[in-house]
Image 1 (cartoon, rainbow, N blue to C red):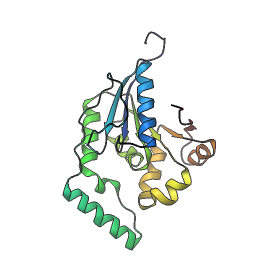
Image 2 (cartoon, one colour):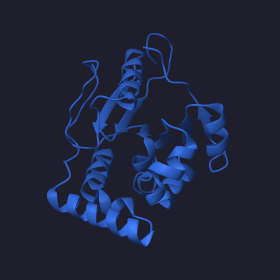
Image 3 (cartoon, one colour):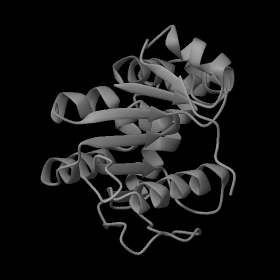
Length: 198
């Protein structure tokens, strides 16, 4: 327990990058607030660049846990996207980010986090694999846009992976009550939290 009587947790937040942007700002705002309340917080940049545009509290852990995508993986990714566009077949997220996923799983195995927060769709698609490899961690799928945009636009090329991630999350967090209902049709453990004012 911390001095405010709240339970202290060891929380890891992963985003695809921490450059300038709305999701990045909200994720860092959450991390800073949770750290100020006495929790141990780790931020992982899935891109491997570890560029943080917004101010991160000094007590937050920022490990170099992920290697950036190499040229070979980028070429494989372009081929897969092109093939998917032509064939209309689904892409497996593991094939797009094989090394980065391996790095993340290795880090999580070697560091004890009680809660893992994965931001948005591509990372949400990893949840079944994370739950398989690290069974004692609670995983939150934090969605920062509308359900319809995710399903019909952003993640339609790997929609099966994405929806499976939603299904296996311990909690799905969306931005609105309407989206909570839509995600709730897939995972009953769904809620909504408005973006914070800064």
